[in-house]
Image (cartoon, rainbow, N blue to C red; front, side):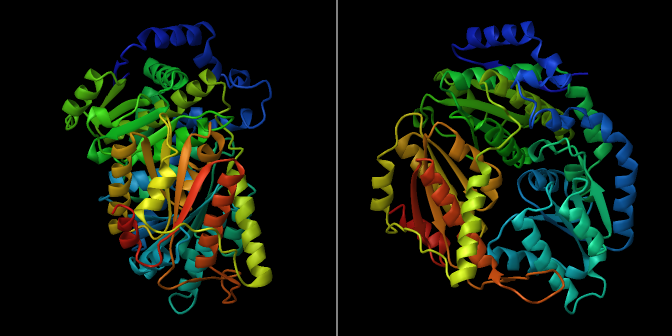
Length: 536
């Protein structure tokens, strides 16, 4: 049963999309995807054949529902009220979406996907530790941000709060990972082992998404039912054909507009599309969280996709003006928030189809490791010498910023990369800056907090055709926080402040190594004030 409506106004690209659809159908691309045919993308099955388990999650997760619901019942029975999910990228974005979209009927969930010391301290102070469940979620088991957070929060509980901290921890990981062993060592309350044949950004309907979803009060059975209903809808193929074909014609800035209730879905789509398509000198840039402007502030590189609940059409007039001005627009109407179960399948299938059209392998992430390697080198240097490299910093003023942005050309984009504490005031300042830059330079703008965005858009930044201008912001912590060398012990050889600075420096070096246009501003401890100086 098809439940989600898709309507498109492609403004001159209807023939190209129809041709792409005919080619896809002639080559039986969708049936071959369902048959796990790796030759849809590459002759070599590496990182394809073992990454297609997501196709069957609406069926394979059905037997897990009873176990997940029993686990949630035990958590409620033991009077837990809060959840802190420690994870990055594919392990955190779906849980955050579920908390923001379905929360209110279950435990209160927040995501820890930062290494900023002030943010870590704020999260610790925002929850009652004795009533908080900690989910340690990482496919590989070795994610440095996640393990650092685990050691910190474990020690907060172990020293003076409760006698058996392990009972407050749950692991979600792949079988045989180092986290599975860690969970046994520290006597975690539970360990959920995921299907290893699923990449992180395709894992929303697996244990990584559904365990947190159930904890916040979502009906996971209903989500899976909606996913199964939508999985074989023709619209998923059409969405992929539109995305891939328009990107090949220069409309590679996929601008997602949502109903307010669905806003967090954009962050999930951002990782899925950016990390899957941004490689081998190509890429579709997802633009999320950008309020609509007048038609004349946009270049000729946009594809607007409006995802809304049936009763919520607040920007219909603005979208109509954009379509009237010649911009391609796609509208998708959902009955209610549970149709997001179907949207997970649609967007995953569409991204896989777009990858075929663009001749991209959508399941690997070849450039993600570069920033990690350079950050590890920074940390090693710190441990040897006691200090990090200074890194080149630009003068903090509007003139410097605008000199840098004179390089912008039609079809470029500007990415604001904020290795700073995520606060509402900083959110507002970043949003004000990105809109001012969009309206002045007529280029797409994105904004992301580091190191969070490294697990989302970081692959695209280094793997696309080099049309990004990257503005990095760093800050000084008000109070640094030590990272224990080992959970349960107080020795520490590094702090979160050192780690986030190493990550910022490493990412900057990785961008420069790829020939990207890059500038760094240091904002001290007054982050919103520093950002406002760039707009004067």
